[in-house]
Image (tube, rainbow, N blue to C red; front, side):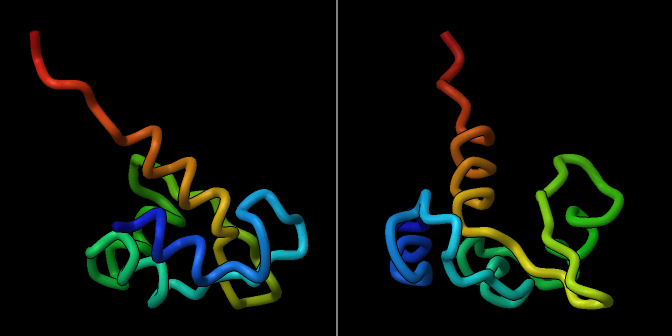
Length: 78
């Protein structure tokens, strides 16, 4: 499951501010999408993925990816 994979990639608890940042490739694996999709949604397309920019490098906080997944969950139509 994505949240289990997400927790394994962090240095500690998912809320830890010193957690290891994820690459676009790692986020793509977690979300089961292409790396191009991750870059598109980090930069210009909706829904937006929150990013951490380090010079030209783009990284992602595991907590932000977890929150993105939770936000995307939709309940079945009633």
